[in-house]
Image 1 (cartoon, helix red, strand yellow):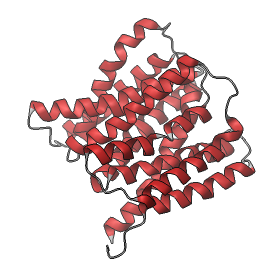
Image 2: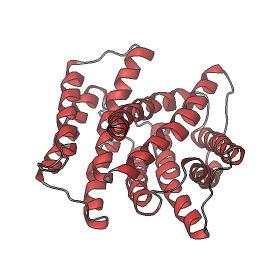
Image 3: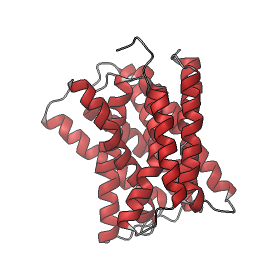
Image 4: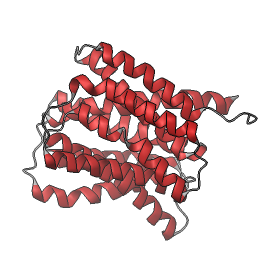
Length: 291
């Protein structure tokens, strides 16, 4: 019963934290250059997770090989995903377009999981994936740009690949890592990954209340909270089905925008939300005879 409740509630907490992260990302970038924002965010997250690990004497990886796998998974899921997403936004890709590209993640992960993890993927799952993606299209349609930055699109797809490959790597090699000690390793590796990018931008941070709020949310809410929930779900389920939750991220972003920024929720978004729900139900529906 406890596992059922956890399995039902965790996706909604993840959806809220991760989806609203897109809003706080744009909020923070109004007061900082992309890589400076990420560098500070990852370093603070590392310090928090490392202190928790030390204070509570939590288990560390036993071998260098484990540390290596955890660092690679983090560099992909945390570092590459965030670098790509932040640079995409800085090059003019809107949150809606970014969300639509990231919404390809369930399809990319499912294709790769079929080949690399031998997960059981049937016609119903494929139908759910297609329906879910169409639903995302309805949600973000009214906010899509008519022209695109080629550099922005490039980094958005880099972000997509980092998240997709990183999720599979996490499932295959890091499912049993401690969330705090493993998270410290992953945020530290991501901090190192960002460093070279600082050389290619005019790094600056305008320290004010607005940036502080965005930084706090992206550090604690997303880098620690949302990613911990994602890893718990990956550990307890098939990564192809867990990835379907990313269809709800644009929904969360739209809802948060409504309450925080006063954006209207269009009729097309309402249609999209119901379409996404149908897709996710199809993807996660158990086969007959399986309890």
